[in-house]
Structure formats: structure tokens, C-alpha cells
Image (tube, rainbow, N blue to C red):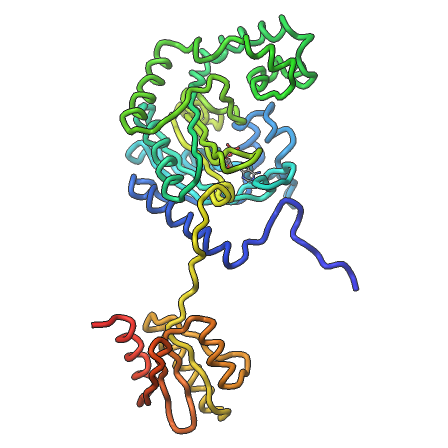
Length: 419
Ligand code: AMP
């Protein structure tokens, strides 16, 4: 026999139990975000490669080595989305959403694709829940956005949550700071890792992420961006912090917080969970006031975050898998073709009346059918025989004769809603 194909490395099948758990994450996100005025958006799974090249940043790991980029039949370069913020900004501009009341608040649940080293909590296809508020630079937008992710993690029972916060300033203050940092790195070039040394020009901020001992020593005395913010950025950041304190959301300032995407400005943040191993980030984001311009749009402020569905589930308290409901099981106590037709029609009628119903489909004996009804947790079993329909209440064990299929449905409906 030839080898059986398997799911590609770094991907996984969402089996029914998992699917039920993931639905609880989706519902919690919908509740939390829609209560704050966010509405759901869906963008295509792939975009013109430029959408990510121009925004995520040429020098980032994502663009340099993680994108699934391909050429389609028409010779266009397309990329499976590695993240969803740039596609949403693309959609905001494409659909003229600046004409709507600002900020436009959008949320999503979307698959993302990154060619990463696969390990627990890190996959090549994964799902993100995210929220974007586009069109206002009010610090309250930043604080509210962070508060909503905090609320979602709380609702899901994510354990050991910590929030780290920083400000990257605006492009101008960042550019000035970059020069200071580059000067510091060059002054200590001989102690840096090769990778960091090669990136002094391209992306000096990434030096903060390095595990290399020499680099870490050099970074311990590096100038910090938080100490070099413009007065306006510093004031904006102070207000964000004040609002978070008012909302009683604990946070730590982390001057070395560098997110892996180039488009962030001002506020950046990350939630981690102590319940996760090396991949401890559950969700994060920040402000991206320059993103719209990178996509050829007018200056448009924006703020948002993304959180990994799989990471949130890994870090959350165990919760019971919601069982599928079966209120009525339709069993056959005879083999006449008319009985089978009646059974089929009864199950369909029950479902039309919003009664979850299942039909015997595997040719089991009556005993086997009753067992199967028990396994499904059926509330009632309708037993169709040559002399009519018997309806068994599986809780009390009582059985009574019922006149017609409609009477079965009526009885089950009454039984489900006592009184
Ligand atoms: P990022 O866009 O890299 O800031 O990621 C936002 C969130 O998505 C992270 O905090 C993780 O929860 C999740 N995430 C990112 N990359 C992966 C991955 N390869 N596999 C699973 N989850 C991921």
C-alpha cells in the first residue's frame, strides 16, 4: 500500500471536541468585543504580497523567512496572510471606511500562516482573534483596546496573565532614538552576535530580543526609547497608563518590548501567560499610526491587538467540552419500509421544530439502538413499530403510546420546557 498522506508539518486538524472548545473562545470574543461596539470583518486568506512587504517590514522575520508566497496563474505574487492588521487597513482604505463614524471598530477570527519552527504553541497555520480601532489617536482607544483583551483573557480563564507595556513613540522620535542606539551598538560591535551586528543598520531594535550573552551585556547599558520620547508621545503614553490604572489593570513597563512588526508607533503591549512554556505570548498589539500611509492611504491612526486561539486555549483552565444535545432519538422496532419512511419524516419534523433529533442509521438491533440513544444522552426515544409509536422518557424510564409523529414532537417540546 502507498503511504497515507498526513496533515502538513506544523498544522493540525480541529477535531469535533476541540471545535466545541474553540467555539467557546469565539463566543467569548464576540460577546466581549461586540459589547464595546466592535463588528466582525473577514478578509481573504491571501493578499497581494505587497500588503505585507510594505507594512510588516522588509527586515522582519515574517517578511524575510516566514511568508507563504506564491505566484498565481496570472503571474501575480500573492501571500497567505501572516497577520491580519495590514489586510484590515487595506480593506478600510479600499471601502472608504474613513467616511464612517470614527473610530471604526472591527474584530476578526482568522487563520494565519507563518513558516515557523513548529513546536507546542507554535504552528504554521494558527488562528488569531483580533480587534482593531481605526481613525482615532485618543489614548482612551489604546487603554480600551488593552482592557478588552484583558477582559477576554479573564473570561476564558487564562492563567498567570502578565501585561507588559511600552511606547515606541512616533516615527520621528524613533528615528532619532535609532541613531543613538546604532551609535551604542557600533561602539560595542565586537561583543555583539553576528546576527545583531549585521542588522545594526536595518533593525537595531531587534538587538533587545537577542539571547546572545555578549549582546545582552551590551544591551544592559543601551539607551532606552522610553527615555527619549517626544513630549507629546510621553504625554500620550502617560494618559494610557493612567487609564489602565483607573481600570485596575496591572502592568509592567518594559522598555525593551519590541514587537516583531515594523508598523507600530506609540503604545505597544503584550500579554504573556506563566502557564505556557517558551512560547509565552498569548496576545499583543499596539498603535500603528503610520500603517495607512504605508498602504498609500491618508494619515490614519489605528490601534489593535491579536491573540492566538490555540495559545489562549493552552493557557486557559480546563473546561468541560460542551456535549452535543440530542432531545429525540428515533428508533425502529420493525423493518417495514413504511416505518423507515415515517422515522425519517419524524426526525426531520422534530428538527424543523428546533428539537435536536437523530435517526437510527446503522441498522442496529432495538437493544443496540437503545444503547446508542443512551450514549448520545437522548432525552426521549421514539420507538416506531408495526402497532404504532411508543415514546420513552429516558430520565424516568416511563414509556407511553403516542398517536402520531406530530404528537411525539409536541410531547418532546412540552417535556423540554416543563410548565
Ligand atoms: P504576533 O502577530 O506575532 O504579535 O502574534 C500575536 C499572537 O498570535 C501571539 O501572541 C500568539 O498568541 C499568536 N501566534 C503568533 N504566532 C503563532 C504561531 N506560529 N502559532 C500559534 N500562535 C501564534
